[in-house]
Amino acid sequence: MTPDIDTARAQVTEAADALRSRIGDAARVGIILGTGLGALADEIDVRESVPYGEIPGFPLSTVESHHGRLLAGTLRGVEVLAMQGRFHLYEGYSAWEVTLPVRAMATLGVEALLISNAAGGMNPLYRRGDLMLTTDHINLQGANPLIGPNVDEWGPRFPDMSAPYDRALRDQAEAAALDRGIRLQQGVYVAVVGPNLETRAEYRFLRMIGADVVGMSTVPEVIVARHHGLRCLAFSVVTDECFPDALEPVSIEDVLAAAGEAEPKLTMLMGDVVASLG
Image (cartoon, rainbow, N blue to C red; front, side, top):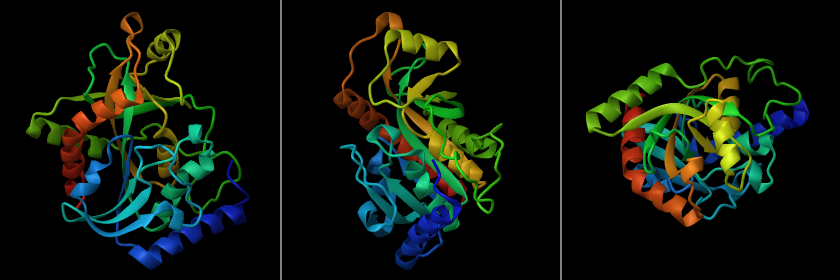
């Protein structure tokens, strides 16, 4: 739940001011790099790397594959802020804590948020290692970062979510994939709390309600980004095939391996979309 209005403003302002003093406020593009997808950081000409522990109010990443630092620099000549590692509800953080970094980036002037995640593929046409461009999402996390008092200068009490993923950015991603010969699926992401993976019955249910992939992140960040009026784009790496009648056990090592294999394709597409924003 959002703290009281004065506390909420103070926490976001403190984080943004601390970052502004170290990295400035030139960036207009924010990037969140998910599980096993941190290598895009190698493509960024990093001017400053700030550990989360040095940013007031930022949680600490507890997931092994998340580096836990904010990178400021340029990607394809465009000023960016990149979160190398994110936060999840299953780590014990509240929806407010998970999304505070997005509010800080918006306060610094970021106008577009690009997100990546690892997800289980439930659409029978998807295969391990595919990339999916998110067209819509379903929130089954039982939490919403907007619960509590609304800070009107951040956004409206009842933000519209009819089109959370920006059509123009999706068009850029589609064009980049076509030019590079990368197979790019498109579909619906459903967010659950985790950290366990789903049962056969749960996969059947999630598929039945219209989801193509399932993951444990992204939706809270998108809700807050849209609250601030940011344009959003999200990619999922399909790290395992979640077909109930042919379900095989999967480990985090399997997930990281699949994410690593898909990483070069995602890095190219992310870079192309960022370049289009320059």
